[in-house]
Image (tube, rainbow, N blue to C red; front, side, top):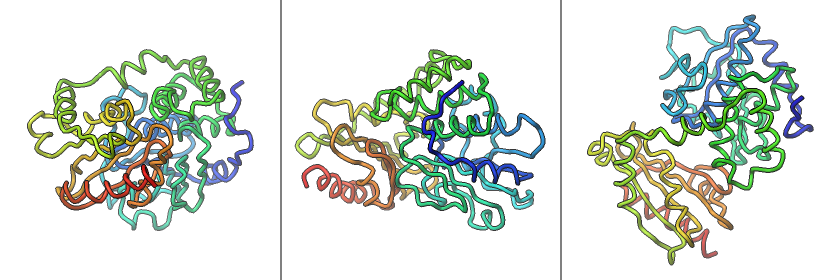
Length: 332
C-alpha cells in the first residue's frame, strides 16, 4: 500500500468539496508544464472513474506536445471559457500560484467554489479553499497523497501522469526536493505501471528539428554577468520566425545556462507569444541564491531554485530591471 508523502496533511476539505460538486472543472496555469498537466490528468482519471459526476478539463493554453502521450491529454479544452457554457459547481486550480495565471476572465470565478491545490511557497492563496504546502516536490505529489486519502488506487494512467509531474518538477530527481520519500513514491508509481524510460523519452528526447535550431540561436545570445556568476540567454519573436520554433521548443533551454561552472543564477528571457512588449523571465538557482525571493521582487514567484515572472517593456528595459535584482541577490 502506498505511503503518503506527508501523513499530517488534511485532505478532508478537498474531499468534501468534491463530494458536494455535481460538476467540476480542472485547470492549470497558462503555458502549462509537466507538473500542471500531470496533476490534471491523474486527478481527472480518478474523478471520472465512478461516472457519477461531470468532470472536464479546460486550460487557457493547449497541452504541450511532449505531454500529449498521457491518457486524457486529448480531452483538455483550451481558450477562454465559452460564454454559453454551463457554470461548474467547483473549479480545481492545480499548480498555479495566482488566479491571474489561470488566464480566465474574472467573471468565470463568480459562483463556483474555487479550490487551489499547489506547492509553491509564493502562492497567493486565491481560492475559497487553499491547500498549499511547499514541502511537496511537485503538485503531482500532492495528488498522489490526495488519491491515498480518497482511497483511490493507483493505476497505470494515474501513476504515469504523476510520474511525469514529479520527474519534471524535480529536474529528473536531481533537485534537493528529491527526498527519500520522493524516491519511495516513485517506486510506488513504477509498481503501479509507470514506465520511467518511455516517459523520459517522451518528455526529454522528443525535441523537434526547429527546437534544435532555436536552441542554437538561444545559446548564441549567452552572456556572462556578475563576475561570471550569472548567465543570461533570451529568445525573441524574430528568432521564432527564423527557426520555425514555438514556445514549447524553448523548454529546458535555461538549464544550459545554469550548467556552466561557477554560475549561481541563470536568467532566460523570452517574448510573450500574445503581446509584443511582454516578456516571460525564468530564473534557476544553483546553490545559495534563492531565485524564488528574487522573482517575488519582480512581481513573480516560485521555488528557491526555480522561479519566474512577467515584465513589460523593451528587451533592454527588462534586462536592466532584472539585472539590478540579480546583482543584489548575488552580492548582498
